Length: 290
Ligand SMILES: Nc1ncnc2c1ncn2[C@@H]1O[C@H](COP(=O)(O)OP(=O)(O)OP(=O)(O)O)[C@@H](O)[C@H]1O
Ligand SMILES: [Mg+2]
Image 1 (cartoon, helix red, strand yellow):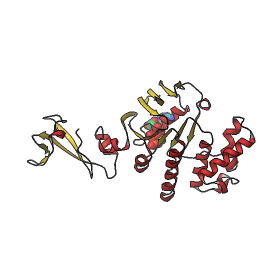
Image 2 (cartoon, rainbow, N blue to C red):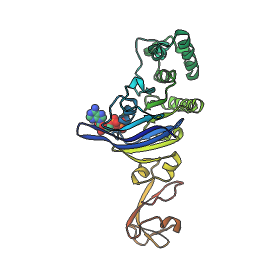
Image 3 (cartoon, helix red, strand yellow):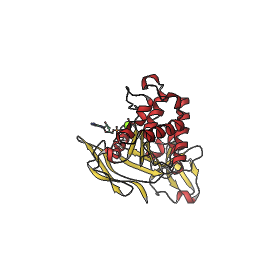
Image 4 (cartoon, protein in one colour):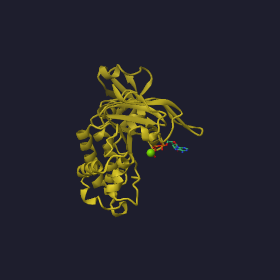
């Protein structure tokens, strides 16, 4: 059974339909990565799951419970923003413990929980400092610590590594992956970084202009893109696109009269006859029928 279900979710902001009926399911312990061009609605979707933006219609279900109209604090979700959103006047320790304090967790339990999270994230030596005394990467870990200490039902990450330098990004990415493997947390994660998407995800969702283009494992998305947009968007370097028409035994390329690329019938039989198709050729990719 799915742990997180997003059902026909729509969001209109002013006249703009930012989300146009999103359907996504994620199993418990799954790591879902949302990708798509800037402005396609990734943050809007994440904020809707968190309860920070009310959807226009549709439903969000967590563990069988419809949470669409539930206040963010009642959803048992933790969100890590790109900007970290730490309290500047609190120490690292206080920042991490704050959500537990708000819930009335007693001091001894709070301290034990903070110690455990600080150990996982290797920030034990930073607990007495304030955010202004930390580097970007250290702040990022504290933001993760604040989310982790609560052990929520779902974690939401909106481009959490985008402010880090390349080296730190690789390190923290490995930490997030280990964290997921050790805790089996259910995660929805937004990124622009294709390597992050391919290495972290159990499931990738490709969005374009508020609509889902494809949902699949990283290998499915990479090797079998559902349409031209996904083929062009995913993968670095991008897939090479050639336009042609299916003929007996192969594909006759446009603009190169007489040039036919041989293809097995198992591939050409999937193509429309007598109408142009786009074909993707990549390093290790199979041709894609369009
Ligand atoms: N408060 C708002 N008022 C008007 N339009 C908005 C508002 N918030 C978002 N939008 C529009 O909704 C669309 C989706 O925005 P969103 O922030 O979800 O995109 P995104 O996929 O997260 O982009 P990015 O990768 O740049 O972070 C954009 O076209 C944006 O301009
Ligand atoms: Mg965004």
